Length: 422
Image (cartoon, rainbow, N blue to C red; front, side, top):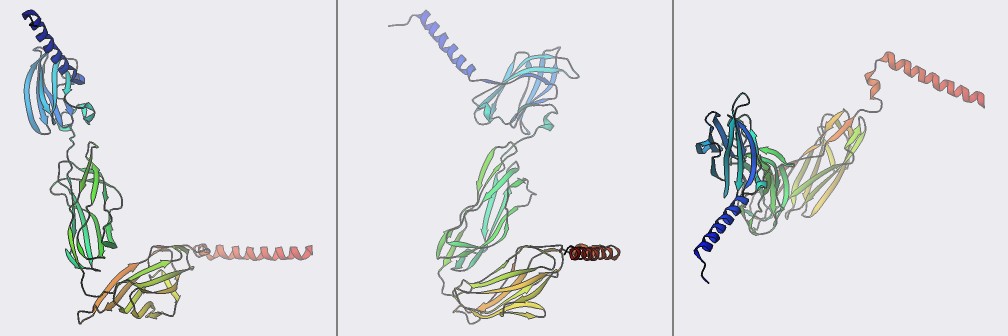
C-alpha cells in the first residue's frame, strides 16, 4: 500500500519530533540561576566565565576554559545558547535566560544542561565566586613506583638489597597512599632497614619534588633459578577523591646454585622485662644460631651496656673484658645454636636499648682466605622508672628526719599498747 503525500508529511514530522524529544530528554539540567559578572561556573576541570554583562543591550560575553586552556569564547543575546565538548563524549550547553542589575555588579541568569554524561561523575559542580583564579582543579596523579635491586645475579644463600621509591609525575597530588609489597617466593626476608608502615597522607607533584622512599630491605635467596620479584602496588586518590592504583616494575634476579659454603650466624636478645624500677634487675636471654652450611669460627658478641644500666652477672660462657660482657665461641656448627643468660641492673631513670656487635669468620670451601662477617643488633627499649624510695632523695633532710622519728615513735607506741593489753 502506497502512503499518500499528506500522510507521508505527517509521518516525517512525527519522526523528527520524536528524535528531538529523545535528544531533549537526554539532557540534564545542572544549574539554573544567577552568575554575577566576573564569577565562573565550574564543572570538574572546565570553567565557564561570564565577563561582560550589558542589561541595556540584553547581552553577556563568555569564555570557556579547560584548566588554563581556552576552548571557546563569544557573545550571547538573551535566549541564545552555546555548546562545547566535555571530557570524553559529554556535551555542555548554556542558555542566557536574562540579564539584569540588582547588586554591585550586573548579573546573568543562565541555564546549564549536560548530555551524554553521568551527572554522578561530576565531582565539582558550583559557582566560584572569586572567579577563575579561585578555581581548584583535580587531575591525574600518575604515581610511578620503582623497585630496584643492588645485584641481579647472586648465588643461593646470598642477600640482595631491595629499594622501593615512588614519585608523582602527573598533574595532581596523590592522597592517602597505601603501599602493598607481597611476599616474595624463592627468597626469605632477612632484614628491614626502612618501611612505610602507615598510609602516606600526601605525595605532592612537580619536577622539583624528590622521590618518596617506601621500602629498604634484604632478601636471602633460597633456591636457584631466574625469578621476577613481585610488584609493589599502591592505591591512592586525587584531590577530587577519585581512586587510582599503580604497580611497580618487576626486577629480574638470577640465582645460581653455587659451590661455596656459607656460615650465617643469627643473634636474638630477649629481655624478660621491658619496664622496671630503678635498682631492679632484668634478665637477657641471648641465642646465637648458625643457619648456614659452613661452621662459623671465632664467633664473638660484644654486649654494649648503656651508662644507665649495669652488668651484674652471666653464664660461664660470658666473660667481662674491660668491664664489658663478651661471648666468644671457637666454632659454631651449621644448624646449631648456643644460649646464654645474663643479668643487668637498672641504675638510672630513662629508656635504654642493649646493643651488641657480632663478628665471625668461615671458610666457603673454595677461596683460600676466610670470609669475615659482622653485624649489629639491638633489643627492644627498656623503660626504667623511679624506684619505690626515690622520693626520699628528692626531699631535704629536715623533712625526712622528722618523718622517720614520727615513724619510730609510732612503732614504739604500738608495741607498748600491745604489752598493756596482754
